[in-house]
Length: 483
Image (cartoon, rainbow, N blue to C red; front, side):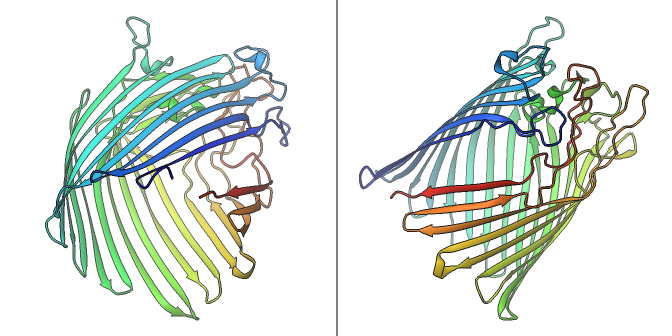
């Protein structure tokens, strides 16, 4: 605390892993080596009717993977395969809020992000630089306790460049930075009563390449009873995708990367329904039941095609008449016992596929279901907490991996698997110590690599991964709070 109206905090963090392991005996490190440093500074300022917050962060990481005997001097060479990623990222966020009157409130937000990455995957180099600026201003009008209106304007600018086919100019053979400018106008109305709450909004965006994009959205909550609530939501969305920022697997193997066209933004139409029911006296405890179903239809969905050509990854948008669909439902239960034990169980079923030219095909790397388990137990007299978490992951479709004769050499779908973690925390005055076990049962998949003995050959493949390759890990740490 610097003064009555100004406070600040400064946090520095350093993490490192210098220990090489190869438990699956494929000649490659199971866990990457890394050195990671971050510095964060936050400010809170009040005065002259304004409440302001500023946040800045710098992040640096040097991450290395590859063959066990890889050394920094091998970076970019073709003798020992290694993956080396240098990342620099700087972020600045700011918010300011002021009460203009009893009815009006003004909010202003600003953020700027700079991200630079220099990566080496064997002999393939990937260098990218991205800058994002976003700002908006909102005027909130509280017409009455039941009605609130929000009016606003926003602007987003993004500059992205890399040395991949995504930014390559085919005529000149040079890499040209991509600029996106998106000014927006939006409006939202919120209504609240004892039995219903609604939120309806409309956003207009003008993309400098794609033109006008309209985004309506809405939600409604019905209080069916004191213990039961029903929610309905729906809306549209769009996003630009920087392929290699989000999909490093495209660069790690021997497959060629092919851009089949100039990629367009993905667009979505989604809806969801959920219901919650709470019972206060079930065996002396509280039981909370939830159920929800969701549905999202993607147009212009960007697809990474691993199957058409086993030696290439083909990136393209779905045709205007084609689409991808994600739908599913979740059932959950949470029970708080009369003593300090809280448990929860949820089951999520997913169905993801795309339709091209009338043919339906399941999308890769999407598990068909997941089960989540959580148990939290507190011992107040000892200031101690125990938490057990588990996740069961269902089968998912995997890429088609073939040998030189075209025969499939890996299963086309993964098995069902689970992972469990335990953490114990002991609190003291102003500090706490914690320890735990990650991946209690030491579950790992077999080596995800294809032809690891020949990492510079056309047969080398890294895309076949569906579960952890890191086994049981013991953790211990200390947290200190200073006020």
